Amino acid sequence: MYGKKMMAIALVLASGGALAGPLQMQRPVPLAEDNDISQAVKQECALGEQLADFIKEYAQEPVEFTEGEPDTSNGRVLKLEIVDAVSMGNAFMGHQKSTRVRGTLYQDGEKVASFKARRNSMGGAFAGFKGSCSVLGRTIKVVGQDIGQWLRAPVDGMNLGD
Image 1 (cartoon, rainbow, N blue to C red):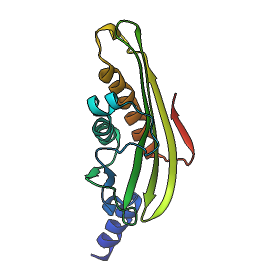
Image 2 (cartoon, one colour):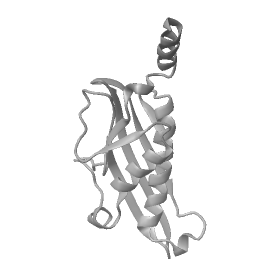
Image 3 (cartoon, rainbow, N blue to C red):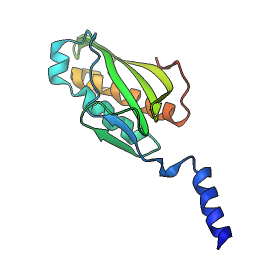
């Protein structure tokens, strides 16, 4: 019996704290106070909701959303903010879109690592048939993938994406 208990403890320790609980993050991801995002993008594009959803999709760990700012003192917490979202051009002239995000990962109140992320898009295939929010959404999706990848092995000071 003693051997089975020791084996169970060893498995929990080897799993990297599987009982530690989910990664917590705010949904929607807030905009930075000093952002220069146009009012049209803020009103028409759901970038904060999309980013949170894409991170949850691409993270290889359970993610739990909080409505307000998460408490960094308990558990694993990712604090994010969208710093900028540039929407120049259009379907007729050509899209020039980009999104910048910054974030910090905490574990039980201690900073683990932080990053900055940026992605650009000109709309990809059939860009002439896409709206501005759709193309910005492409940048948000890839930033979400970048953050999901970074969460697997966080390195402080990383610049993700373009």
